Image: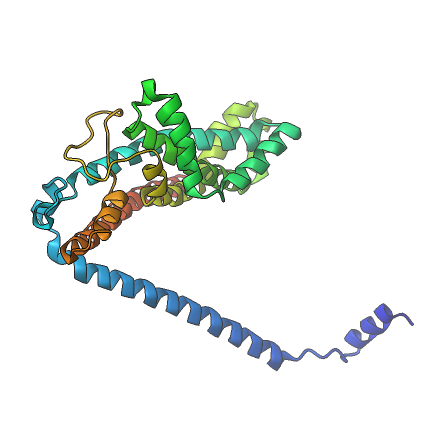
Length: 302
């Protein structure tokens, strides 16, 4: 009798060693390890937030929010960095969302399986893991130098386009996964009713995938708002006494301003850096709240 036949006979005869107690013990060990890792991560995060709040809440006031940069800690504020970050995020959202979603819809719904699309897919997957400083050097070469008559060099537009390049691969990958999660029967039902490809995608597939797409956008914008290296590479200034008035205006951003304060030897500037981190987190939470609200609205209308 073969080994497979012997194994089948043992299982049928009840001779298979189930070892339920050993399996339950392994489950408990894995659950304990998972809970331990989660608790440690939450405790570390809570400790970091607690120390930031202790150091930064005392210096958050109206003067801090409405003042420009200064070499004196008591006169320094975050106003230009706040508005610079706001302008940057508007440029990033306005460029990365339509381009990223459009590219994902084409690759997933309209493109054919050939060497060109496979090459594009491989490159998108690789670009998602490229260090951010590489995108900064690309932005320096293209947006600051090559397209300087259009972007204005060290400008909000150059910084926003550079950050858009940084998060585009993440948006494309997340959008494609969301489109794949839509049941194929929805597409076939639309075709059966006489709709063409574009009507099916725009009226049925894309709205159904929008909650997943917005989740990817939330993660992408959360990464973009905290990036410093690409902005330093394209020449964003660390000391500026004006807010952006156009897309070609010079700018600074909150991560750069925080980095500048942390590098100062005076303890007062370190407290200002903690205050800047609190303001940055509040802005990030507000952005995420808006995106989550829109995602929930799309889920309710499905």
